[in-house]
Image (tube, rainbow, N blue to C red):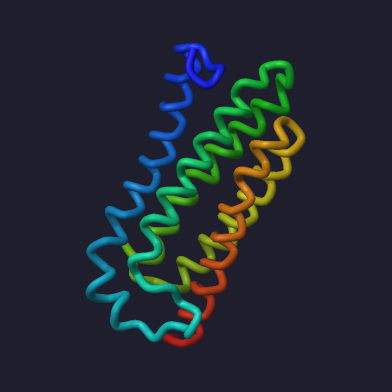
Length: 163
């Protein structure tokens, strides 16, 4: 046992963290080529963080997301609500990767804005379900919701400044 977790639980925790990091990797596939070219040429609001901030923030958020979904997965006594929470988590994870394609891959702040509004809503509902099943899991998703809400504001500002 490590940290009170059985070997199988450690493997499942690692799986969930890697799954979330994979979503980030898919997103960065579309993001990285656009940063020095298309994104660099966009007008951005003064509150835009430097480019180097995004990678460590997202890596950290994906770790927190992985831990959160693991905590919900462990709560087998919740049956259907847990299944619903895990399904919604999967949907928002797909939406997370999709946003990078919409914004950076398509080079469309409008498509990105539509995608991120849907993503923020999905995160919000996921967080609500997580809080009911595992309060710590919901707390771990809170920085993700806050950061994505901030990113939505940036996306909106970029759309307005560049349309």
